[in-house]
Length: 53
Image 1 (cartoon, one colour):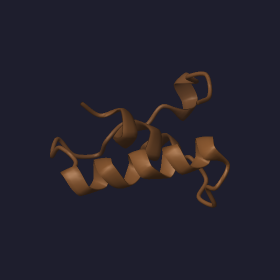
Image 2: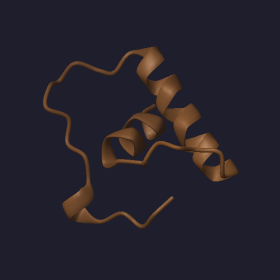
Image 3: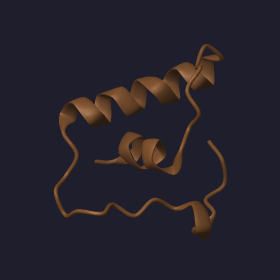
Image 4: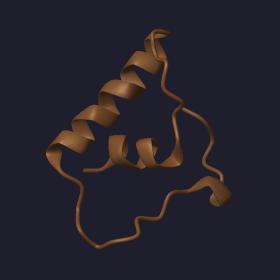
């Protein structure tokens, strides 16, 4: 992943936690990007969802 930049850090607009499906999808997008198969740009929101615990 890229270095964390304060300007590109994602801040959720609601206090509602993401669903398990959103987290799983984000993790798959990041995994495919690491494998070189990804066609989706990794945005700060996708990074946030993939790292959500």
